[in-house]
Length: 136
Image 1: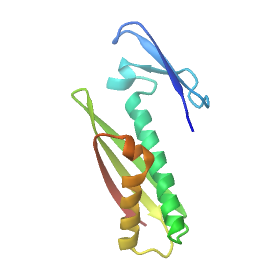
Image 2: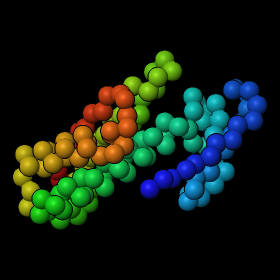
Image 3: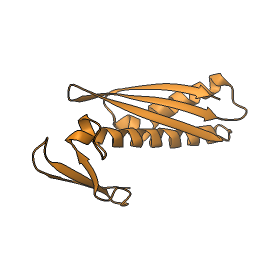
């Protein structure tokens, strides 16, 4: 499987602007700029997209692992916070809340940690990943 995305940028780093389009067109000329990356400007940014990718991938991998272990997850809700420090991405902090009937917290934590370590996006990252998992 291959997926692609395209970025277009016009102008200088601070005054310029750009847009992103994905193969699926979920992002279709979605704007990004210096302000959307480093301030509170309108649009997306690479770190937000990495966070979405990591949260989505981890959650799907966890669902697979729980299902294969004989559990039926009712809801898995994950957020990822990507940290950009001094021009370098340093961390993806995953925070998970889950409703999984019939599983012990010990088993849940074990399966969640494995999913964090083995989801394809985690494997692509070369920075720290943390996981806070809560069974509710």
